[in-house]
Length: 225
Image 1: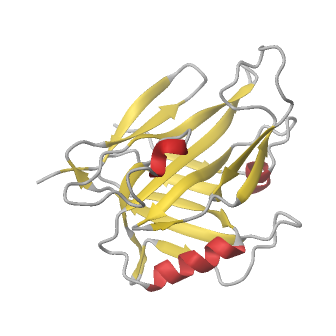
Image 2: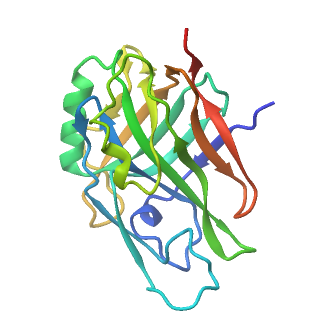
């Protein structure tokens, strides 16, 4: 029986991962809906590159990167045919773009998205990616969202997805109308996304880890008819 993956994530840590705060955090690091790229316009800070050897000498004390969104929640049963729910925060500019997308029909849209969640391993004394998109297979008859070069610069490879129901008649993307109150001094807006498994010649793949050394590849998606 598959073990579900459900995480409540620290938003403040997602923006600025302070070295003495070991709470889990996550990000969307790349996202394209159809031909529209959602800009990685959030500037995020880590105490060190999460994949770095904690005992390695030298190097910078901080690691800066960009993200599309900082996550507050990830929920997935880990079954290949079940949807994945993401909640998080985006910039006001991206919130406006996503509201415009949500106002259109997303029932037939294909999205390409790169996601990673980090947790702290107290034995290894470093963060590790407990969930990350690992490999995507483009559904048949669909042009790659954003063009074939979208994933070239991403450290975390994207997967492909459809959009799933949010409840009622809403599909795929929900963006709050009012700005979020936290973190203090960081303009941001709450976001919810439901990703539905696509049909493709091969499965989408996520890498799941329970520590820095224990990892597995979990398939996601529907068989192509």
